[in-house]
Length: 103
Length: 395
Image 1 (cartoon, helix red, strand yellow):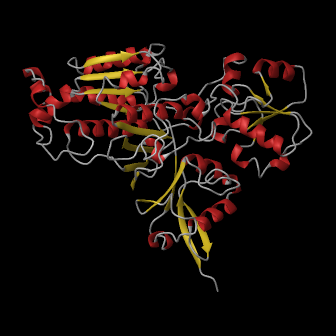
Image 2: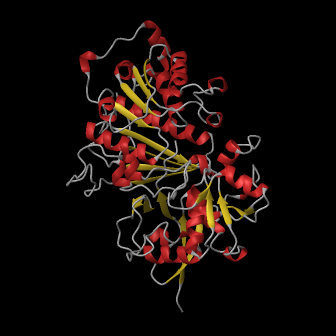
Image 3: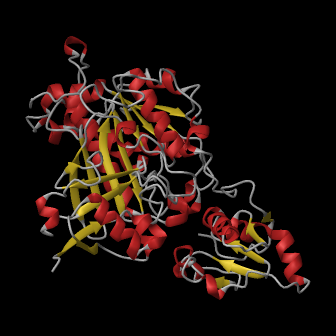
C-alpha cells in the first residue's frame, strides 16, 4: 500500500482568488514528496492554476514566483528533490510566493 | 551606539549637524535610546531619504521619517489625490482631493516637523531622471505601485549604490526587504522578471486592506532609520512575508543571485532600460492584448438600447458585482473554465471586469475555446460609469 503524504501549501493572494480557496491548501501526495509532486497535485486539483506557477510546456518555475519552506529558498532546488522533512511531516507549509507591486 | 550593520551609511563623523534645544526636546525619546542617542539623532538629521511614491506605503513612511527628524526628505509622485486613495493614504485628507500628492504630502511633513527640508518632485520617476535624482540621496524607499517603477527603482539603486528599502502590498498580504546593498540580493535576484501584464492584479483591481500599507510603510521607515543608525539587524538578505488576515509574519532567507543581470557576476545591464517595455504596459485603462476585439461603452449602450442580442459576461467576483453591474451573467474568471457550458459559443458576448484586464484574459480564453464573437468592454465597467452612467458607484 502506498502511503499518502499530506502537504500544506500556501498560495499567494491572486492565486487563492483564481482557485477560489481561502487559507492553506492541503494536498495528498502518493510517493516521494517532491516539488514536482506537489505542483502536479496542485494543478490537478485546481486546473485554473496551470501555467500560473509553472510554465505550461516546460514546467519550469515562473521567474516571478518563488518557493520557500522552513525559511529556506527552495526555488533553485531540483524539481525531484525531496521536500524538507518538516514539510513532509506537515509541521511547516510549502510557500508559493509571487511578486506583488501594490503600494 | 549598537553594532553597525552591513549596508548602513558610512561614518560622517565631524560633519554631523548640531541639534537645537528645540530639537533636543522634540527627539528626547530617541536620545534616551542608547542605539540612537545624540550621535544617532545627528545622523538622522544629516540623512537624505527619498520616498518614491506618496501613496499607501509612502504616507506612513514619510510621516514617520519626518517625525523622526530625517534632515532631507525627498518625495516624488506625479499623481493627484483621488477619493479612492483616502482609505489608506493617510498623509492626504478629504480636502486634498484633486491636489498634487507631493504638495499635499509636503504640507503634512512640514506640519509634523518644520525642521525637515522637503524636496518635492511633482514628476514621474523615469529612466531619464532616476540616476541623477538618486545620487542626491543616501537611501531610497520604494513605495511605488507598479512593476515597471519597481524594476526602475531597483536598477537605479544598484547603479548608484543606494540601498533600496522595499515593500509591496496586495489584498491582505505584504512583502518587505532591503535590497541593493553590496552584501545582499537585489529585487531582480528575487524576481528576475515581472509577471506578464494582467497576470497579477493591481490593488485597484484586487483591493487592499487600508491598514496594510500602513503596516508595511512603518516597517520601511524602521529599516530606513536602522540603516542610518547602523543599529540592529536589517532585512538585508531576508524577505518578510506578512499575512494580515491571519496576522502571520514569516521570514525567508534570500541570496544574491550570481546570474542576476544587474548585480551578479556577469552583468548584462549597465544602464537603465525602458521599463514600460520590459514589464509590458500595465493596461489598467486598456485591454491587455491590443489585438483583442473590443467595444467602447457608448457603442455597447446604443446596441443594447436598440434591443440587439448581446450577452454581457461579467468576469468579476460576486462582491464586485454587488457594488455595481450591467445586469450581465456573472462568471468569475477563475470559474470560467469549469462553467464554459453555461455559455452559447454562437452568441455574441461582451465580457467585462472592472478596468478591462481580467476580461481581456477571458476574451482570449473564450476565443481559444472556439467562441468566435467575443469582445472586451474597453476600460471595463469603470469606463461605462464614466462615459455612459455617471450615477453608477465607482470603486
